[in-house]
Amino acid sequence: MKKRRLLYYYLWIILLFSYFIVCGMFLQPPGEIVRGLYRIVTDPSVLVSDYLEIGGIAATFINAGLLGIICTAIVMKLDMKPNGSIYLALFCVFGFGFFGKNLLNIWPILTGAYMYSRRKRQPFRNYIVIALLSTSLAPAVNQIFVLIDGPTVSAMILSAFSGVMLGFVMPPIASHCVKMHEGFILTNSGFASGFIAILFVSMFRSFGVELKGREVWSSNYTNELAVAIIFVMMCMIFVGFIKKDESSRTLVELNEETGRLVTDFFVLYGKHIPLINMGIVGIAYTVFTLIWAGSLNGPFTAGIFTIVGFAGFGLNLRNVIPITVGAVLGSMLNIWPHNSNTLMVIILFGTALAPFSGYYGPVWGVLAGFIHMCIALNLSSITAGINLYNNGFIAGIVVICLLPVASSLRDDY
Image 1 (cartoon, helix red, strand yellow):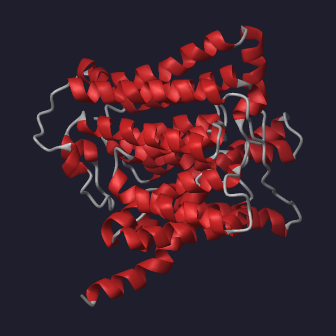
Image 2 (tube, rainbow, N blue to C red):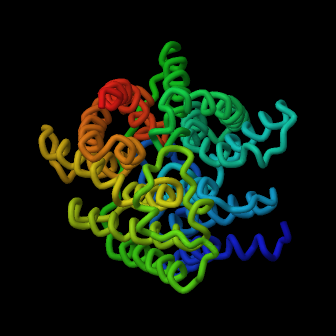
């Protein structure tokens, strides 16, 4: 594809990432930004490590923006025509640049996926989406580095080697996992990462090395985050409305889709209608988060941008609202404060179950969201915080449990 046309396709998302970089440059002095970036790349980065608290808002904005720009450049170098799966992967990398992924820990994972493509004698472009999504395991790189008292040469080598191995095994495992949930979750990579993380953590614990998650949350940047997020969402809606697509299909039709994998809105509805859906969903969940939790932080921001990515690849308001209703009910009925940070994160990332709700209906969606909340509160420790898409793993478990029942009852009618 001609480079100029390729740049046109990716221009909007490049501008989005650049916006956060520029904002970051004006929010704090250069010296503080550099120190913040250093704290970010040397942090263990396991769940939950809010980079806004660790490195400050400027360094976090720049970290996330640069991750997005770099990964977009890789995709463009591979001459990939954009679609919903690519945009989803880019938004996931960018969003988790607010907690968990940084400018150092993604590279061993990407290298491992690249080596797998070479071993299979296939072009890396065939694996770039799963490679980007495999960075869900990036905290494992930092965790090993910290465990053996880095920075030393041995610590760097061992952490890099571990990351390469994780990236290498991710593509075949992710490919197999699709068969297990049959396309009824949007985070297949998170489901696969969960199994890999369990194996990784169990091996360390078997040798007496205890890996643990933690909770570091920020609470001081709600206004800045709200303005930034809503501004970029409104820009996406504006671009979607002013551009005419060759597709005659409408936003109403998009909201009638079940979302079951693979439902690529950019393939089905053109380049601009999905942008409207992404912007609307992004604003809706930003406002909902502000009302329900009363604040915004790094993990919430990651959740919102992940949902925005989903909204180009199967998620719409019709199939996601029942999931959120079920998760909210679960948060209200359990023993924890309903608006706690942990529960809000579960609500946001539980939206990965949207295809299940879209296919089997809102009642099943509410039930799935409710069960997801219950399981997520009790199963997170087994991955020790190294799987950033842990709720994707939980979503897969929920679907595996509910799918046989829902399918059986559906067949009776």
